[in-house]
Length: 430
Image (cartoon, rainbow, N blue to C red; front, side):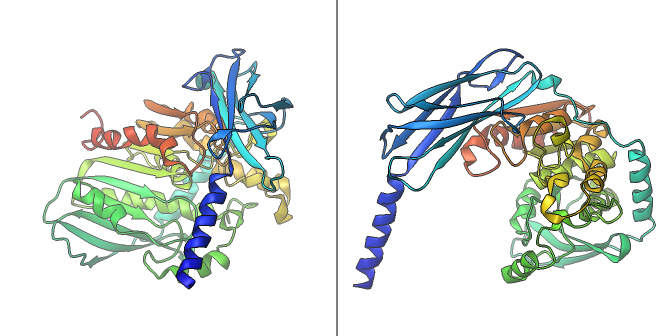
């Protein structure tokens, strides 16, 4: 009887989900790219249970993902409606669409994106005058602390690779934790540094074992001063406790920002790799997504040994974006009003940790993925940062991609990612 009730409950859930409205939004140009003042025509389609929906949608156009330039309500015809908009300056538009089926309690929200003259999008503010001096001083502080790398071999049962846990010193008594892997019994490897997306969690061994099997000296860095492989409950407790809202820790003081230690960990990780005898002396590639993309840009901007970077939907871009009328990227540094801190101090501190201000110091080849409907790391700020890169770059614009969720929407980036890594294994000019 219990099994029957369980099956019935699951069937009911499936039927309920099948009847939920599905809202899709597509621009009339597959690329989602337009010239300034060209119109974009989005087609909004709503289906319920696979059939065209009836009723109306509410929509609003947000320049740069912030504010409202136009809004309205439109009746569906055969489940569809079109919305037209443009902008007179380089930047992005975000179309937000809301639909509630008659008699339904849940409102469905979907997004459409477009970008106008993406190569001409500019920073929202200049870097602080003492930006370089500040980071030079912080790197000097780091170099004044002995690295004292503790590299401990751990057996994995795979004789083709060697795996290690790594601990090093960071500034002010903090530690750096990571995992390292390489092909067994060999030397002369390109270095691959993976930096992590947001959250508090353990590192998975396969994140370095896989690249090691493909010929890399692979180092995966923990974003926090935490061991890499405790039980899940350990990280859950940290996430609920002292690391809850960690991006807001010290965000009104450049000497106390949580990201100061994190970014210096990245710098030291490159130092660690380039001092190893099993490195090939040529290639150091850094990659990550979201917070990891943020760290990847910063690492390439801070350390000249980085020879290539890959960043998908990078966070940390455009902390001063709101002041220029566009949505800033995660962690919304200067917009964290719930903290009851001095907004001016948060904004001033943010400028020293904005990927936008590290970007002009990036001189290596770069691959960057940008989701045009990303509301966590909005495209306009990312593109403004990438436009400051001094090295060759490939920007992958993904018109139907948000920050996460649908992996297929990010496929265009990952279709190039593996090839990008292979191209940069031998280092510059190889």
